[in-house]
Amino acid sequence: MEVKVKMMMRGWFAMVLLLVCTVISVRSDASNHKYKVGDSVPLYANKVGPFHNPSETYRYFDLPFCSPAHMKEKKEALGEVLNGDRLVSAPYKLDFLQDKDSEIVCKKTLSKKEVAQFRKAVMKDYYFQMYYDDLPFWGFLGKVEKEGKSDPNECKYYLFKHLHFEILYNKDRVIEINARTDPNARVDLTEDKEVDVEIMYSVKWKETNTPFEKRMEKYSQSSSLPHHLEIHWFSIINSCVTVLLLTGFLATILMRVLKNDFVKYAHDEETTDDQEETGWKYIHGDVFRYPKYKSLFAASVGSGTQLFTLMVFIFILALVGVFYPYNRGALFTALVVIYALTSGIAGYTAAAFYCQLEGTNWVRNLLLTGSLFCGPLFLTFCFLNTVAIAYSATAALPFGTIVVIFLIWALVTSPLLVLGGIAGKNSKAEFQAPCRTTKYPREIPQLPWYRGTLPQMAMAGFLPFSAIYIELYYIFASVWGHRIYTIYSILFVVFIILLIVTAFITVALTYFQLAAEDHEWWWRSFLCGGSTGLFIYSYCLYFYYARSDMSGFMQTSFFFGYMACICYGFFLMLGTVGFRAALFFVRHIYHSIKCE
Image (cartoon, rainbow, N blue to C red; front, side, top):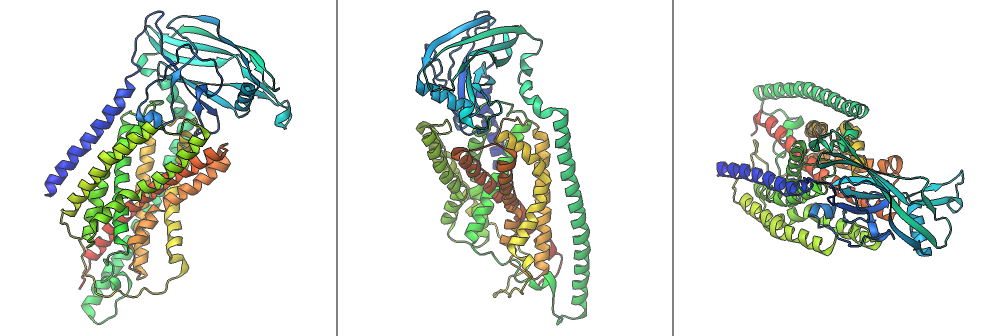
């Protein structure tokens, strides 16, 4: 039976990777075009929004720009829609190798309402994003001249009306595009009055030797600059030193203490059997007593195992180069597909563990497993999507996309969860406990306050967090800003270090808990392992107020809402890692002594 399960798991693992790579590669091959002189190259306007609020983006033509003669919306994949991309034909015509000088897009008279719209956009530092042959580029809509005045009503607001495109090509391929605005060609929007505006653009083509295969390297170079790499390596060294000190300290202390314990217990058995036992051996009849709320505990371990598997798959895809810069929606597509396909792992792990803990209502346990992470995520999504709809932002998912996600959940996630649960229930594995559990639990002695759950969680979460906090800034600046993060190898090393530190600190605290004759270690080890997630959420507060310029109800709710879900996922994943490490350790030490 076990051999069959292992073979099925290997085949499933390969299938997931193949399926995800296929889904994403369909999108990534879309821009592999060759052009002739005068050919039309696709140019799409994507979105506009405040520069400091990355989640608050709107459709390009929500502002009264010049509209093209034939407006065409680009069909987008699931990940692109989740990313807030809404591509539509741009009003500019950039044919291959066709230079243009001061070409007029349109002449129009802006009404008072349209002037107010543009003025508000300029005041909030709005930027636009477009894609030319799948190459992204940006620009600002206008500028504010404060002239030393702090009152916004006394500032001057200008809209740029001339856009200069500089396009690099290599033979028959587009390699790079840059857009800059002419600071002298601008329209004054300060006053509430109708304004005549003439929108123009210029195009300049230049030849380059950069091969087509390396055209995306421009976007990843910023994260690979020497001073950035130095900081990343400092982060790695800091984390490694933390791990070495911690593992060395724990290895020395625990090995010494355990060796003394083993010698003491062996000596006590030789001298007299009537001598009263003390320390962790004293509670050998209670240490494997099943935890309270075992259905919730098994569901937490199952969900944490699924999220851990999800992270492993994401890192594999990142390390093989799937998530190159601006592969629109690739990460979101991978997250949705892999989470759906790994739900069987959650069902199997939770049901098997629940049955090992002699649980009987495995169906309810399976329902709890399926809703433990998805439930809070769904409620958060409902609230934030409502906020996005109220703001008319592109973050609001269309009804069709919501239906697609529901079908994925109903036709893939749920059936795999049930199949995994049935396989786990029928696995018939028994819980391996080296000591028999007594009928009645021993009373836990009165312990000092610092041995309570919350102080222990604070101690357990601080060390893993200190090993990753430097790298956290770059991740936050990428997810909630406009930086690009591409050094996945360093991130993977930091992730491994996080797992090692979490496991070791949980093992150490579990030993001290058992030495104090407190046998309720199951939930404690899970909570201590997952407490790093709470520290990450605390870092969110620091990042929002001290390291970013985000503002407004929508951006604030998106930031704290979705970060709460991410940190909750880390809590479940690291809690599972901490519990598994503690369980391995507890089994090992009680295997090493005689237990009656």
